[in-house]
Picture 1 (cartoon, rainbow, N blue to C red):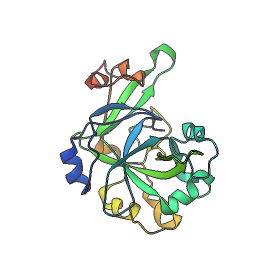
Picture 2: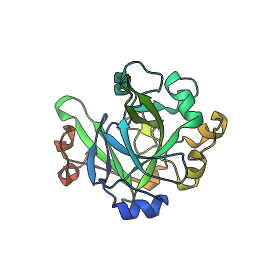
Picture 3: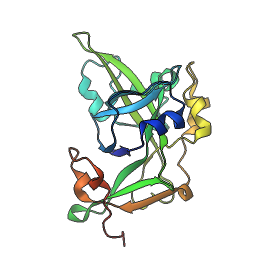
Picture 4: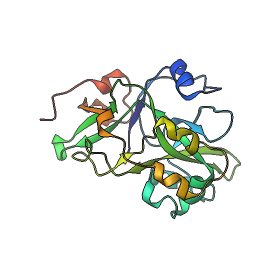
Length: 224
């Protein structure tokens, strides 16, 4: 799964990396993005813009927005059949920019966070789905879910799932504004190559969702 991630990359680099026409004015470095918090997404609309939505997808047909608390991750294997995701897969896909994510290893008091990032520590993109829900009062709430798949070799000892990191060559297909059939999309949702990833144990400070800042990434002892 993916329950926490980072986006520390500067707006200037994000604009260049993702060929964006617009960025939110209040985009600041994030070291501990957690469910229900605002996350940056690039929806499959032209021109490419980065906007902020709630993490935890609320389907447009939902009667209760609390369903979003259970929809932070979407399993790639069931996207085409699960009611919350069938239509977003066809029509409402997005990239979720990030530059690292956390998983936890161990049990009980020995449980500790591990930070996973690209070699070189550059930005990348999770595959995501988005939707817009309208409250009874008429308020529009944008939200998203991050797609997960089987783990790559480097992550298998830590967790049985990982977020889908889309390679650059898949971005155009995933962000195509026209509706698409699952057969053309599901093959993109593969484990990311282990040789391109690095991981290291980090501070338990990140365990608390309210904690932010570089302290989240302070290195602890090795995994051995």
